[in-house]
Image (cartoon, rainbow, N blue to C red; front, side, top):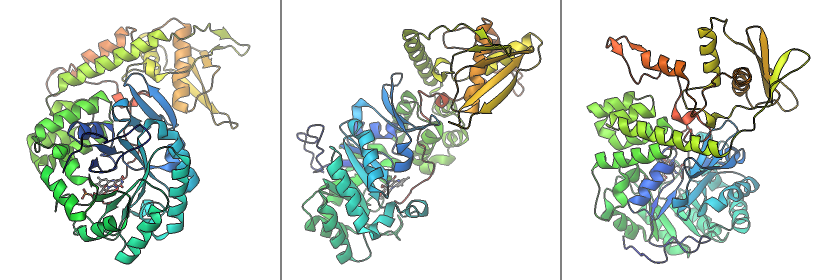
Length: 500
Ligand code: FNR
């Protein structure tokens, strides 16, 4: 493809869609590490995976100072969308929606952190079409018009949509003309209809007819496998479709270096680069594993493939690639950065008070960021009770109907402890109660930067039955780096929208 170095992306409010190499939206694949990798290899624009409007509307925008990212975080602390400064002018946010007002609310939520807004109108899967989203929109042009024109008027980012073709060319052309009149900046066309699957041939003719009919840029999609196997094929596909730009999905998922002018890089190198980003941005291990499996494809039966297949954590994935030391180093750095930030914002010291019912109370809340992934206050309290030969702590939790918040009372050695602040979940409330107990007695609670000899000792001494010796890195205490609010639970989309 002919590459234009100048004028690719204009000021932050415009995104040029001429002569661009574009990473397609892909559920599970299109998270931050893959997008950054595609940019490294020469993609000009990257789309995120499709994110559903209702889910996005529950999210809060959080600046993540540990990872240097902007996170959109759901009430359950899952990161639904993570982005960063590096891709700000290049990332297009794709949403699934069937409602103009909701779509606009989502656009407004993310518009200052992304370069463009896209609506997916191509997903043929039932869970999407059932809600009137995805390919269901293709048979409701009035709704398409409403959604797109509302977005064009209401957001200051360029708006695009991604469609599939209709069974008749005439209907397709009528639809795209109507779509163009809404004022969108470009249209991506997957050259298959909603009944067709990847094994069906993509219709370059239909994309060409659309490109010749419209004045806005048309982005050709659907060429992986049959047409696109290497860099030079991308330009051939563009010419065959007379499109302005090309959007690549599967070929980029199999090897993101497809965007590299000098040709594909060896998979081993690509996977290692991907893994570095996945660790750096604390990608959820299931998502990392999925992407690496897609790259390994035919080699899943190799020794490395088997190790990857069996991996149940980021650490095990890293070890499968000989990156064990890199994993340790990344965790150490992230923990240090977290501790550093916490040290700069010291928590107000709360004095415990005993109320008339004899319960010791403090106004505190459990902040997951203040603790390493494997350690919680509850664990510390349990460990301390064991050491002191006390009965296990007993937690009693209540939920108040007014706002459905939780409060927990923990009983230790016949004394009850409770926070005066209420929490969003039972789990959090129990951790908070444990902190009140530990803190009011001056006991270690496992916070970052605080030594907890007993827990560490237990970790080191866990015997390995198979090897007959100590298993130094055995994670006695469960927990994955992704469990912290500051870090990702990766994509919340567990559904695979393959073939959208
Ligand atoms: C997809 N596709 C897709 N499309 C979309 O608009 N939003 C999405 O979230 C997804 N998710 C997705 C996941 C996976 C794993 C695959 C393989 C595909 C469809 C994709 O963007 C593209 O339209 C098709 O794959 C056809 O393009 P290629 O693969 O021939 O380049």
